Image 1 (tube, rainbow, N blue to C red):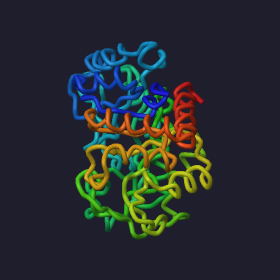
Image 2 (cartoon, rainbow, N blue to C red):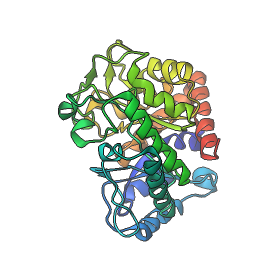
Image 3 (spheres, rainbow, N blue to C red):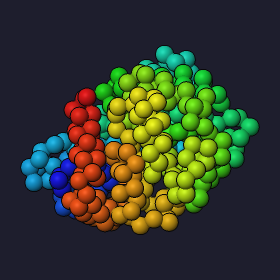
Image 4 (cartoon, rainbow, N blue to C red):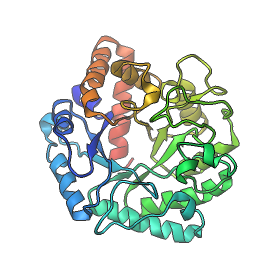
Length: 334
């Protein structure tokens, strides 16, 4: 059970070199997934060496020799973790959205190949949130940084999914985010608490880009950490704790069969009301598949809480087993 629980976590590693805390949880807590964070300007070869040091921890004792999934945020513009020799300078999503879809897909295929050469298997992109042009300057997580592919769900769907298709063609798995959308909030959940979306509904037109991505076969979708008052009004039910968002909307209504990834559940201000262990158990109880954590020091507490509950509660253990199987199946190309 310990190794299965470890497969459900994705921990941050500095893009210029993993900390000892990250290296420890890869071994001690069987964590099977990492993402490169921060900024590196060292180029492809140096990044590959950083990745190789971490993948070298894989063994029968850590993950039963299951390969380590390595991800990063390579959106472009203000959100591009990997830079330097061999990596293209990627424009903002708003600039990408001005390209022909075929051109953007070809460019993204090249960007995907660069990640693959560095040992990265998952890109935590594209952003498929829709923000209107008038509201964009007031939208801290998306519009302020020009992370949107356009100002209508149709434009975002067309160009965001061209990027998605290109990354896949470069043999890297894309991640559609941030379901069900952050285009209508003012606060950024990373640095602001109590962020609410008071407009988005369960069948909202702005879900179109995500519907298109699912129809196109995307295997990773990241849920936002906002509250969605018109979707799940129950107290405390931020999206990663909401069965309505993950089970009803993503699984049942949209037919998504891949990995549901959280946004950062460790350092984000939005999560401050809950302890680390409660955050993890709430996420998996609600239907989440892979918990992303920016703070490796939080992993032992989260891992321990999940493992303890799984050993005590057969129903929760069944959820953990199903999530682990989902992760391993998608890792294997399923």
